[in-house]
Length: 493
Ligand SMILES: C[S@@+](CC[C@H](N)C(=O)[O-])C[C@H]1O[C@@H](n2cnc3c(N)ncnc32)[C@H](O)[C@@H]1O
Figure (cartoon, rainbow, N blue to C red):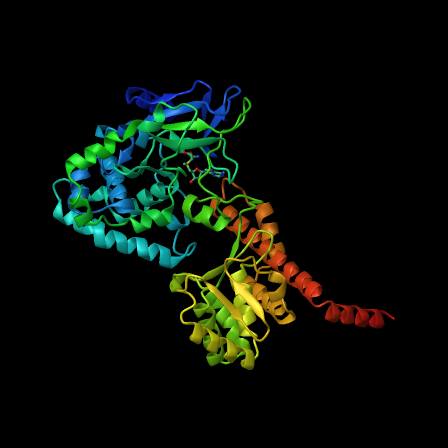
């Protein structure tokens, strides 16, 4: 049953004494099964400011009592914020954020805090190494100020899970931080009702023109990761004077603004971004059924594996190298993958790679030569390249027809890749997964539930990829499709 629990009452008292303001139309609902959600007690209208949060009351590296320790150790981004959270937790009732911290779960149920059997070992190892390299030395250098009980690896994982699922980008001065009240709104992909804003002082007087200086709200984990360790020289280069002028540049309040009308009794949602289920599970610990932004990734590694089953290693390497030189690979060679959209449509880059793999040696050599003569295509300002021989013009800027690339061989390759990707789910069929999902409880078996939603939605996308490949093949190869149906007719007789 939904109640205004004791912890919520304590939180509201804390907010009042810290200068928070919120609309009477907001109802905070706390259930043991689903945690806290925000609902509309009456009709709410687009443009209404429904909550104001003072920046100074947000828990950030700058506001935390551990600010000096964190900055002396040059810890920025999520590392610094994790120390701030662990430090304030260690103070218990003496922390200025005690009324806020008591409302937070100990940790968010992200794969990061699942057991090693349940999750990706490598992810946990990296976070463990972060702790070992950055937090452990801190304990050794500040033994009188930091109580090791609150800075263990488990506490670090817990803080990291809270940062991943609840932190916001505040401003240049504060960086990322925990924003009480703003973090009570649940997520709906691509359909938010309320928006988190940090207004600049210039915009404040202009009521009609709300400008998001720091858009998106809940932060992107990759951005946090990049900001993992503060660059000492960069920070040292900015004087206190400059910092205070940075702070003056912005108002002291953050706001939640309605961007849609919401009827009485309905939940008010924020959005944490446009995310597929894998990203939602990874960063926030949940998934959405029928998430139209869901995607499946096919790693370049998997394409290589498939390619090696048909061609020599030399062939695979040279074709991929040409594809790279044509400028179609991503910048990061370590994490190259191709997205398959919710509708089962592959990235054009994958179709181009498959097409190049199947070029005859003759055409391949001609193209290779043209690329060599033209110099480095990837660097060229025109970014125009071509597959001669077949006279197919490949231009990233122009909307090249996928149809041209979808030859019978490319379509068959897509079918094989779908099967190979599917094999990564193990021996259980999608029907087994659907049955298991029907049996499991959203509340009691949270991890299993979301893992199954993720698997099933990805496998449905792979099914759509198969349909896409089969249909495209019929479409681009009507003759062979016609021949096939003739054969079938014959057999029937
Ligand atoms: C910013 S908090 C939102 C408030 C949270 N419900 C609470 O109890 O404090 C983010 C967390 O809420 C939960 N959450 C948010 N949106 C959700 C959704 N659409 N479905 C399931 N859980 C959701 C997830 O556990 C997520 O990590």
